[in-house]
Amino acid sequence: MKRIVIFASGSGTNAENLITFFHNRENASVILVLSNNPHAQVLKRAKKLKVSALSFNKIGFTGTDDVLNILKSAQPDLIVLAGFLWMFPKRILNEFPNKVINVHPALLPKYGGKGMYGMTVHETVVANKETETGITIHYVNEHYDEGAIIFQSKCAVLKTDSAQDVADKIHNLEMEHFPKVVDKLLNK
Image (cartoon, rainbow, N blue to C red; front, side, top):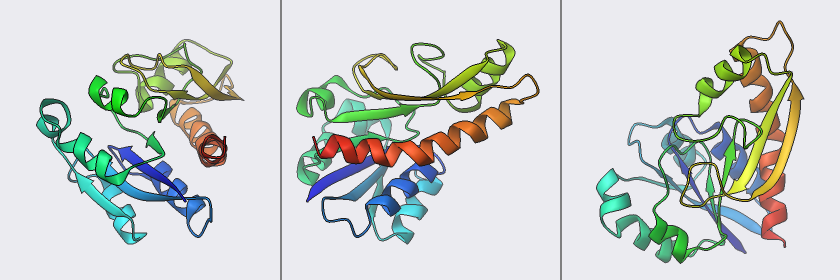
């Protein structure tokens, strides 16, 4: 049984989708959700779905080995960032090489980097009059949104689309593709 650990900072719809997708599967399951926000909705979602959920602070993540030790204990086959906003520490990446992935709400390398997440990305896409956008699932390295691309899926951006319209399209792509890509990676 492959073990998945999810990191998230917010509401947790992607985390919930992954937990539900892998529930009762024989090949993998989500065993732990970690959040840098003790008030994040994702923690409640995980607990409701009977998945262990913990929060941590910046010191535990970057200043000590607290989070690293939690991960070593969990022995994940894959660490999935689903709306997690902090830069991942190099020592965790070194401990889990090619086992940390992220979903980004744009077609990287466009609209990536520090500060480019959520509605900021969608507002920028609309402001720049892009005709398409999408999602990118990529490996995480020591730079924001620069790891090797695993998968991309595109959608059209209409002239009449608001940033919220784009956000809804991106959310649909994430819901459809993210669990399938995770499943495929685990079965490599």
